[in-house]
Amino acid sequence: MKKSLLVAIGVLLGIGGWCRADEASCRQAVEELFNQTGMPAALDQMVVQISATLTGAAPEDANYGDAMNAYVRKYVSWEAMKDELAALYMRTFSEQELRELIAFYGTPTGRKFLQQSPALGQEIAAAVHRRLVENSPELKKMMMDADFKVFQDALGQNGTAPASKP
Image (cartoon, rainbow, N blue to C red; front, side, top):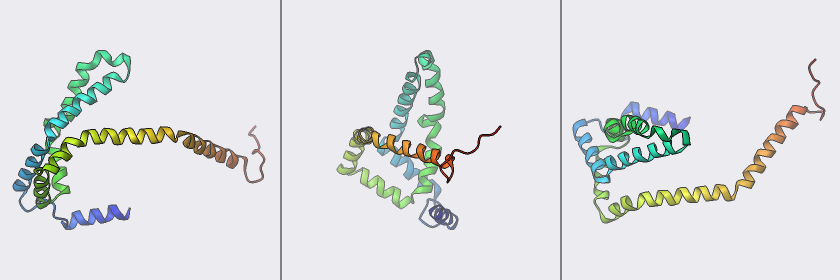
């Protein structure tokens, strides 16, 4: 709550260097960053993955591949999302910060980061999944404890079941 209030106040006061002074220049920086990082191709690849996931979720959806692809492409493709994403970046970063990101992604380290990010993301997701599965007995116990507490609370403080209603 406190954090949200501070963010809102910051936005209202215009602090933080958000792109406001020269919107056209800032938009150009955002577009340069998007092109440098391969955002258009990445988003369009995501459309393919989302469509495949949605149509592969249930066998009965297999006949809807073309429709699902058209639907997702209509609302999530680069063309559909670029203005909204640009506005998001312009609210989040100052033009100076955008220029610094452009400079970083122009370095060998920045290019390596972009190249390795998808694989790292997959490895992180696999590690998270593995840890959750490995420790799932603890979750089951926590859930049983929570159910038991609800049951105890339903019995009331004297340890007897509440009177049933006629």
